[in-house]
Length: 351
Figure 1 (tube, rainbow, N blue to C red):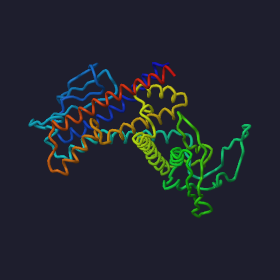
Figure 2: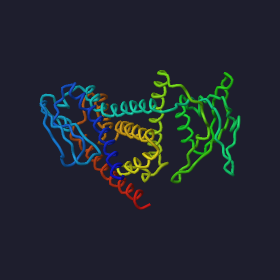
Figure 3: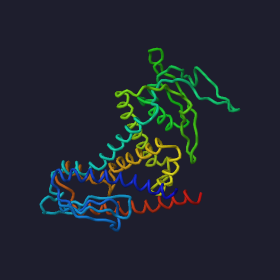
Figure 4: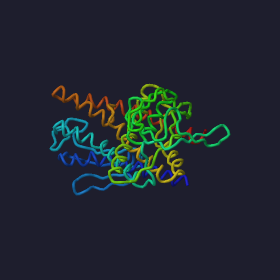
């Protein structure tokens, strides 16, 4: 079965990469940029065919990336259709299109997930799953100041639109207390200093909102659209908050995971069913989209950063200097990938 999960992980990465590079490719074609190769993967070629448009379409051995090779992308060029000769606004669109396509894919998949789910939930409290010391389930009309029938509208300063907003916001609270705003009997009510239940994972403390049940909703078309959009935004907030926590030092680099770790996650997630597996796919493609927009060397966001400098200066940074920055960034990424892959292997096979 392990082979099946490896294959499934490769398929996930392959689709994400294909969608990403197709975004770059489509807008490069639209703006008549000369393209020499469209590749999914890095390393040795497994397959390559030259199209009627003169572009070589390649599949390479290492399925963790890809590229659209455009004339004049990394160096000055006077060739017709060179990337560097295009107006900066066109280059910005071409470079950002890959990440945007990943985010769009995430929302499309979220729509499939919402549409296929047996139940979707509001933010109105219907009960509490509270268990005592001997394992008996207890029923309350009120718990932690929250009552059955309350509609949760804010956790701290964060507006709550769907249940996932509530679950994720509580998760990132950890063991901190917070004010909770609800609609009760048609009026706004603020419940002060609510401390939610917590759980620990790998030494980190997370808030737990699972004990609060909320009411189910009919899957009308307007509710489907709302849930798809709001749950997609919630997922992006989780990813963004996680990235900020890493940059702030809350989580160490040992908490990062690469392709090998994702394969292990695919295996674990598959045991929970189709919905969980599809949600993992959503998180992966949104993660790729968000990370690629960060202003980091060798990422699309790094290239966008130099283009924004060009907009301010009125002229581009010399290509060779930008190339040095991206080359150094790429080298650091390779080192980080080696470290992350080593950690993934240790976690999967030696712990």
